[in-house]
Image (cartoon, rainbow, N blue to C red; front, side, top):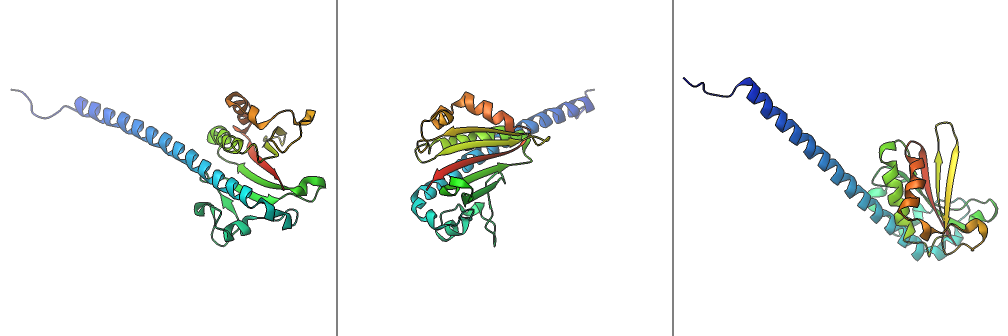
Length: 206
């Protein structure tokens, strides 16, 4: 007489298959969500960069080191999801702090606007985020003086890489241009962000 129902071995096999499919689905979802966030970050950077270009003539009225976020909030020039209620702090879709300010009063630095993206505590994804930010800034090479990547190791060793835009002169120190930031160059620069605190700076002369 044939037994009805399924054996324990068969049930375990079914559960194993379901588990494998669930892991695969979660992995696919995580990759899709990360890709969505990269695209969203690009949109956020583009919106801010376009506003910087449009309102560049107004920044000369700001004091050195002054935060320009309040002005951008009044102009509705910032993505709403980046803003913190009752605060002038900005965070991108990856929860990286974003800074917007006129340059400090040291030397000629006050004649620049700084757009900074700071990455901390996300070492596993820093590399891809770094490349995404560089790609976004690269599209504004004609408007930028320079792009810098500054990484700090756990031993407080500071590493810097700089590339210069159309606003910079063609002197020897400015030989590395933003248009030279191809995929290989970005890979090399962003590898330093993998396990370190890392900040990417875009400088616009005003």
